[in-house]
Amino acid sequence: PQVYAAAPPEGELSDWVLKDDKARCMKIVPPRTRGAQHARLKYRTLGKEKLGTLLEVELLTGRKHQIRLQLSEIGCSILGDRK
Image (cartoon, rainbow, N blue to C red):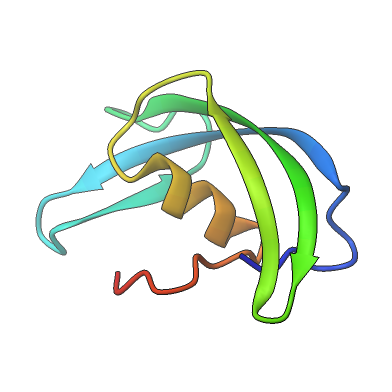
C-alpha cells in the first residue's frame, strides 16, 4: 500500500462501517449512523518498496472488509486488491 506523505508512519484508525445491501458493499459512514459498527485498527510502516509502502496491520475489531475500507479512506489502496 502507498501511504501519502500526510499520513504518519504509524497510527490508529477509527471509523464506522455499514453494510449497504443495495450496492452490495461495505462503506464508511458518519459516527452513530443507524446499523453501523465501530471499526478500529493500528498500522505501522515497515518500509518503502518500489511498488508502494509495506504496512503491518493489527486489527482491534473484526469487521467485514475493514482493512480495505479503512486504508482506502486515508488514500492507501492495497496493491492487487480487485475490490
